[in-house]
Image 1: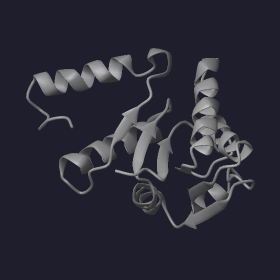
Image 2: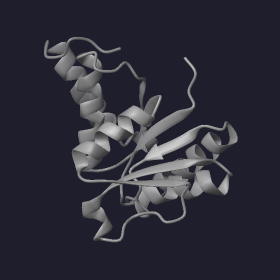
Image 3: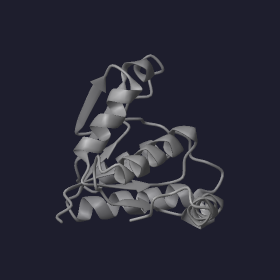
Image 4: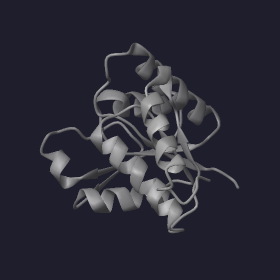
Length: 161
């Protein structure tokens, strides 16, 4: 399978660990170097802004998808290749999934987890079959991975691909 674009889900905040920003920068530069388009939530703050800036710095392409609600907060990134404004969060997620050939999940909060679990659910239901990579920066997702393993061991998951 050829990967031309990757949807990255991550926080609109930077978090407390500087390694999160460092990993986002490294990933963004690597994507640009390999001519892989970044598809992301369209924000200019936190890890979201960091990875978009890194891809642009590396000469890459960035597609941001942002709901109208966040425009009022002025969180949109004005310096990217393509900013798409959608009416709501559900439309945003659907378009993010459609535009990416695979997904990478960096540290983030509730929104990032929502996107991760929806992608996992859609894989389970065969709505799509895209690779989902959890970038476990400095052990950020260790407890989540352990909990997912518990759900599997206790018979609540149909299987992990």
